[in-house]
Amino acid sequence: EAGVVQSPRYKIIEKKQPVAFWCNPISGHNTLYWYLQNLGQGPELLIRYENEEAVDDSQLPKDRFSAERLKGVDSTLKIQPAELGDSAVYLCASSFTGETQYFGPGTRLLVL
Amino acid sequence: ILNVEQSPQSLHVQEGDSTNFTCSFPSSNFYALHWYRWETAKSPEALFVMTLNGDEKKKGRISATLNTKEGYSYLYIKGSQPEDSATYLCALHGGTSGSRLTFGEGTQLTVNP
Image (tube, rainbow over all chains, first blue to last red; front, top):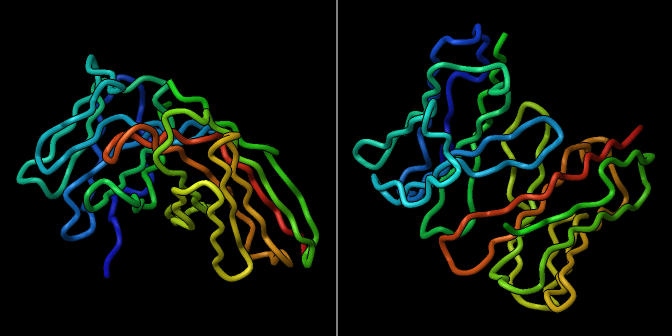
């Protein structure tokens, strides 16, 4: 069974540029999560989807971050414009019925 | 906001040593505790999901225990190998099913050959 797929794996951009990350969850998983992991810290939830509905986005900085999960499968997370402090690892995870979450390898973002 | 703490922050051991780490969490509002292993450049891998007080789980040389009344979980690695080198994360699943995971900062384990 294929795991959670994320792309790109690495991204380097200049500040004020836009950036987008893509996630393909495990087939059949209805719940999808985006996490932010800063160096030396644990992952923090940005947004959680149940199918195509965002049910927990309280930690998403909505002034510059946006996410979508059209058709309840793949998801994209966008930052516009990026700031230096956005340099981090962006993890996507999926689960069935909200139990064990399976993670992708993450996208490592560096904003210069 | 739930506070999940892990100790130590980092650990260096020799191959063959046994080791253990701690995850502390608020004992109220508990639903489940998850342990993950995260190797560099790979996906975090789910090790255990623990729900009942007194739970003990084992996977090869790795085992974990859970005490929900006092709010802690221990992860043990017996006979550490270099391939065990990774960051070990615990995450609290509080409240009810579907609620968010709150992660600790992780314990970074390095096993020297």
